[in-house]
Image 1 (tube, rainbow, N blue to C red):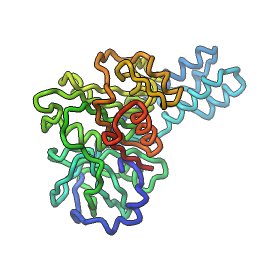
Image 2: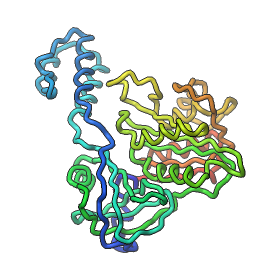
Image 3: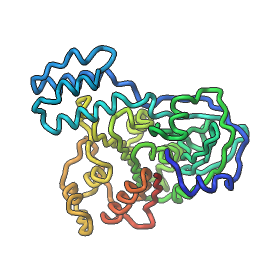
Image 4: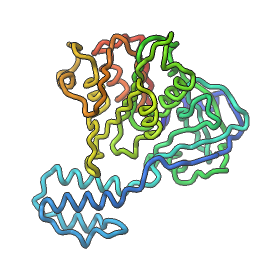
Length: 346
C-alpha cells in the first residue's frame, strides 16, 4: 500500500467504493536530492586510495561510468571497493526525483483513519497508496517511490504536475490503524515509503495529544531505514518533533550513507537497531543468534531512553518480508502479540 501494487486490490479495484470522480493535485514535492557532486567526490576518494588516476573520466557535469570502469578493469581493487563503485553508479544513474510527496485536494472531502490507504487512478492505471497525511491536514498526501519500469510510479514522479487531476479516488481501506489510547510507549518501524501511514499516525497522535495518557507522557519512537539520508521521507518533520518533544525519538538507519558523507548515526537494519535500544535484561532466548548479539551493542546515538518490550505498542510497515521479520523480532523480545501491528506490500 505505501508504494507498491497490492495484488488483491488490483484485482478488485473496481469494486472499491468510489470516493470522488476527481482530485486536483496541489503539490508534487521531491523528497530526495540530486547528489552528483557528492558522488563524484566519493569516487575520487575511493580510487585515490588505490593510486588510480581517473580524473579525465570525472567531470563537473558527471561521470563517464563506462569509460571509468574500463579504465579500472585491470586494477587490483578490493571487492568492497568495486561494490561501493557499483552502488555509487546505481545512485548516480537513478531517475530524479525518485521520492515525492503528492498532495491533492479531493473534490469531495472524506474521513479516514490514520494508517488507511486509498486507490488512485492516473492515466488509466490504478494503484493503492497509503495516506501519508493526518486526517487533520488541509491537504491529503501520498508518498511515492519511483520504481524503474513501474506502470504508475514513474509517471507520478516524472510527469505529475500541480493542477493535474486524478480522475478517480477509491477507499479509504485498511485496518492498519492506531490502537485505542493506553499508557504504553509506541514504536513505529519502517523502511522506505512504509513510513507513509506511520507519518499519518505520528502526526495525528501529537495533534490530538495522544502522546500522553491520563497525564503521563508516552515515549514515541520512529525507526526509519533507507540506503541514503535523502531517502528518509519527512526526515525534517521527524527531526523537528525530536527537538520539540522530550519523549519523541527519531532513529534513522542508513546502510549506505557513509559512502558519501561522514554519517555517524545508525548503519544497521531497523530490526538490528531496535534491539540495541531495549532495556537491559532482555534475554530473548528464541531470537536468532546473529540478532541476539545486538542486545549487547551500544547505540550510535546519544539517546539515553530505552525501550521496555513489556510496555510497548509496535507499528511496522514496509516490504512484506521486512515487516514479517520485524514482527518476529518484536515477538521474540517480549512484545505482546496483541500489541504488534504490521502492514506489508510488494
